[in-house]
Image 1 (cartoon, rainbow over the protein chains, first blue to last red):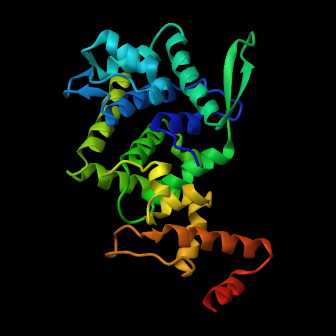
Image 2: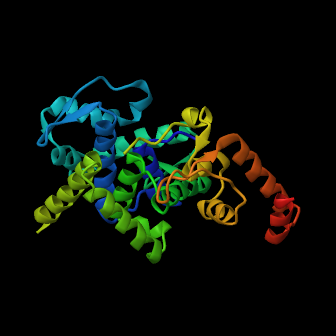
Image 3: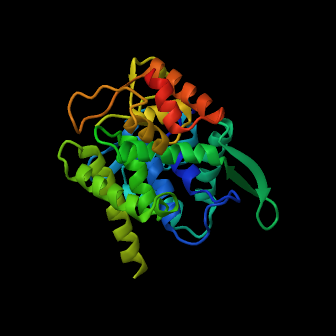
Length: 216
Length: 85
């Protein structure tokens, strides 16, 4: 079993069998970039004062795949959470998000969780075909933590919240299980001890609200 | 709420959770839950509603043994009998 981070797990679970992110729906792109910011916050590499993000420490070598996110915050700091997410998701070209997908995709290739192929219109796009066994272990880990009594890790809660927001939870969980998962997530969110997770869920909620407002 | 433990930390722990067993043994959660409910996998639980903790080495060996019995074509009642001997 491999040690995969929040963003690595999120990308692995959202990639299609052909190695691409679904082209329709901005949610996956939003959640991938939000996942990058969240991971850096959970790992104390970025700081958030409730309004803006700043860089707290240098980027560790084992997190190099998050360099596109880290670099964007570093250049724009202090910067709003949504500004960073918009930088990757709401732009005229796919350049920024493709950089992030490639960085995380290469880290997954190194961890032997994907196969890399060339694709796209002129064969210039990198495709990362997910290893189904690795995806299954992630899904089973979510089941084992959220459908069981007892403590839950921040990483699993953040991953489940992101997968739920991007509409990927239904790919892996039955309607019955999803109901249980959502109930458990709400309990966690409402528990004052889980402040960090509440913040993470709130970031994601406010982000989606902003996108909906911007689109209307 | 804690962070997910790294594989290195899990390998060095005396007790592990069912989620960690999924990662250690590449066995599906539903299978481990079933084995637990059948009493095939002993665990510690300080109070009801708290996390079940499984002795790592003994449980990994037990899961490997159950898998080998399944590969031999043994049924669940047969496995139960073997484990209770």
